[in-house]
Structure formats: C-alpha cells, structure tokens
Length: 170
Ligand SMILES: [Zn+2]
View (cartoon, rainbow, N blue to C red):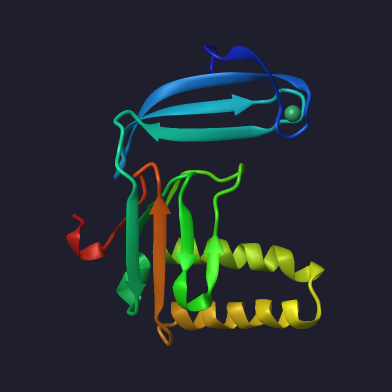
C-alpha cells in the first residue's frame, strides 16, 4: 500500500467493518488520458476497489460496434466502471454493478469476460436457464469463430469508454 493512504471512516463494502484506507493518484492512461485513480482498500478482509475518472468532464457516449470479421475481435476496448454493455443479437445487457471496474482490453477480451460470467453461473442453473446459458456460449463461440455477427453497444454516462478499430491505431 502506498504511504499516502489515508484512513477514512466508512464501512467496507465487502465485510462491513468500519475503516478503509483510501489513496488517490493522477495517472495517464492510454486511450483515456489523464485520470484520477481512487483506490479503497480494507486491511481486515483484503477488499480492494479502484475507480478511475478522467480529469476533464466528458459528454456521455453511445458506441455501436459490429463484430463480423476476425480483425474486429482485435479492436481496442476501453470500458469504464459506469458503462453498460449490450450484446444486441444475443439479447444480453450487462449493467455496471458496484464491483464493476474500468478496464482496457480488446473486443475478444470483452466477450470472453461475459463467457466467464456464464461459466460461473452454469453450476447453479438447470432446465431452461441452463439451456439458455449453453446456447449463449455456443453463439459466443460462433462470434469468435466469425460464423455469427455481433453488435456491441456501450453506453457510458461518463464518456470514458471507447472502441478503437485496429486500422486507425498505430
Ligand atoms: Zn473489509
């Protein structure tokens, strides 16, 4: 933990004990720019959560990106902790929760993250829910293999998120 961490009198979101440590620092993130990163850390249970917000106020963004060829999977994705992600053709909407983080990945990484969520859910499912889960996993593979097109929508009220196609990158 960095030496400038300050003790704050709020309850830990994970173990509910009073007192977490907070640090904030200015960082320069590729594709996002200068941001303030605030990290809270609980010494008792090890809970850690980082929040990144750009220094400049930004307009909300609505992004639609169609995945239909292998290069599309390689497009850079910046997803902020406040962004909602929709996989249109799959009828899937992922709303940001308290554990949601800002991350930089690529389109395949974004899709695989959702696949991980399905894998975690699967043991608790049966009947129709299990079938739906299996079906989604099959269709995700189809998208990754280029057999099915997928429209990815990102709605970000903070305006941080972006999908940057490979062609326009250096
Ligand atoms: Zn805790």
